[in-house]
Length: 485
Image 1 (cartoon, rainbow, N blue to C red):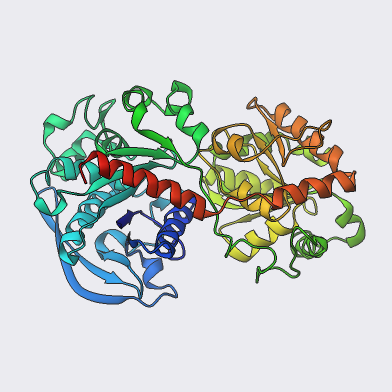
Image 2 (spheres, one colour):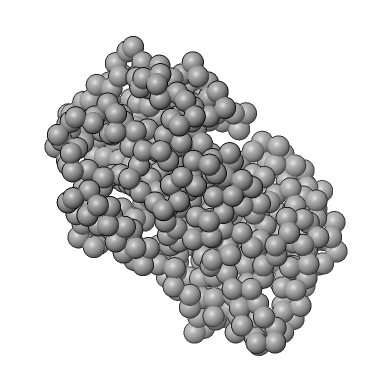
């Protein structure tokens, strides 16, 4: 099967969040499965300056963006990843914007990228069976194929799969940007891409892709409700029969504490003694304790991810006095909204020795936090899937999380009487509910045997991409059959 993965980011080339992990891992897994898999990304400045040598194919594409033509040049790596270069749009320090806000020309940038992918297929003579589109940045691809390219025989047998990784990010732009798409104004209506007077790129994918997907079964159900849909529940209910939830996986080649090169000591489910070494070194690195032995006895709670309201950072900030009264240390690594970055940095300054906040993405430190933490906190307001809890389970960091989306699908709440469970869940989005779950977790912390059993059970859970990739391929085959392939 010929599969094209269209994404605005993908590991190992460029990453701001979980989307990159999904796109990159699926691309690699499909190649392992011997499918002809192709990945297409924008050629960002950070990729050009990165560690991957790229080859100029000499192929260019001319992409209409409104009344003008923007030229893209196609580069490739040594496998089958392709990059569309247009320095006007992508030669910037960040992918989507700066902490103060999104880039003002994001509509033009991702109109160019979406239509550029279609033109690149033709220029490379790659006729995909499936184009797997991801989030709003590629939402126009299915719509272009159903409209401007409807009569193009090159794509006659191509089907589209559109994944919603986070419906809270929709690609909303003023109506004045509609002409840049080169789509007719007849599509600017409630049944089309219009959304409360704006152009909605995510909605373009929802109304036009052959199949829709989300990254967990619970999230596939939740987005049909007004509370979780960010206004798109009506559109989604019309397509309910076409929506599938496929839980994300993690790459166990990268995330394996037994082989992890970033760790001072390796460990596995059969021997977790190395985890204590990781905790000791992490505490030294982040907290500079005067009494290391005493510091190591304290429970260590870790957080790694985007610093945003979606991730429940407001609950964490509200709870700092209570957290400190529990006698825990808190290690946070992430990047995101300026207000949260500022607030958390101020808190870490006031609470030195107890709370550590590192702003940014640091691969080595992320691995260290997963390995050295006793508990991993994810109090998300909503969570389509979440990768942090999957990594935490493999690294023996017991998740404490809100029961929503993929967190509900992947964490089994601890049952003290049955001695079963892999984490601690709470339902209400309140600081008190989160603190109650942490109290339950801390009660287990003092019982070494029960805690060791819980860590063992969590580390044995299988959330590999192999399973998820097989499910996606099954869905691809089904949609191709429906198209008469």
